[in-house]
Length: 387
Ligand SMILES: Cc1cc2nc3c(=O)[nH]c(=O)nc-3n(C[C@H](O)[C@H](O)[C@H](O)COP(=O)(O)O)c2cc1C
Image (tube, rainbow, N blue to C red; front, side):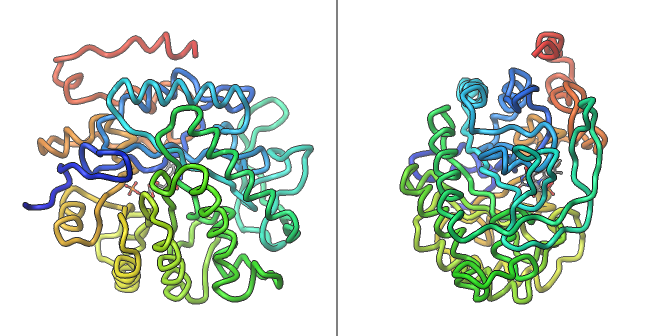
């Protein structure tokens, strides 16, 4: 049988109807106050339920874990109820949905932290760049990052518990599983990479030590969810959020090998061969080599993401380089992406200006093929605007 992006795939207790995954996408549109998922968010996810699997936008596991204005959380009763609405809407539309669990570490600002405290990190090293916060009037504002506070060793068990509680909350809200966010320069990635981790305790220095917190979190979450409902996202060679590692091959080779022992739902890799966040046409040879090495060391389900087109995705699946392909920006602009790829239809272009914040516009009003062809009318957005 020829492998295809359009064929079914089993992970743990679930059958995915195709191998196209909706990548985690922060959209900063949760209901305020309280960072609560709303009917608008539920509608957006249900529109995209034809994906084999949806991974939610990164969702903070605590207030300390928040790094941007208006991102949703999974640590209050109201947030759990909001997510229940999202999960039910996706299930009603025959979809599957995992929640990406997020602690941003140093990519935050006192304006977002409990009692205006400093953000926490493995080491007291400020990232270059700006934090996205709201000012006293509730308006969005960019402010420079600050020097974070280095976590004490004896604070780490409580941090692991934050992930465990968040995973329990996600399952109790009806989500099908969780993805631990260890990519893109957030807390767990800050522990992994040498540029952000200069600790001298058991969580810094050697690769084994830098990977310790991630492995503790994954093992603890797998104990409560069942390992086959837990995925992990990593971004080897990633530079987003001012990141870098002195030897990413050795670091991520070790991480892939250790995660391989845990019988996870999947390992999700932000593929550096085409630039990760940006799309570059010529593949980066070091990125290609690191992906091949991860494929070799991690025997379970491998999901890849980053600049994938239909052709590149089919090629990766047919050549056994990946089992699942996640699409980010194409899913923002195309709620019916699987149908469009299957039929070779043209794709809507995503509008960057509406990626973060706002309401209906650029969120749920990208047309499906049927709406475009006049076979279906547009939904009544006024109900959603009211939230
Ligand atoms: C608007 C936007 C928001 C994103 N939010 C997240 C996120 O919450 N968590 C995450 O791991 N990656 C996030 N990413 C990265 C995407 O998941 C994906 O890796 C990236 O867009 C590359 O894939 P693509 O070329 O298919 O878009 C985001 C990307 C974009 C464009």
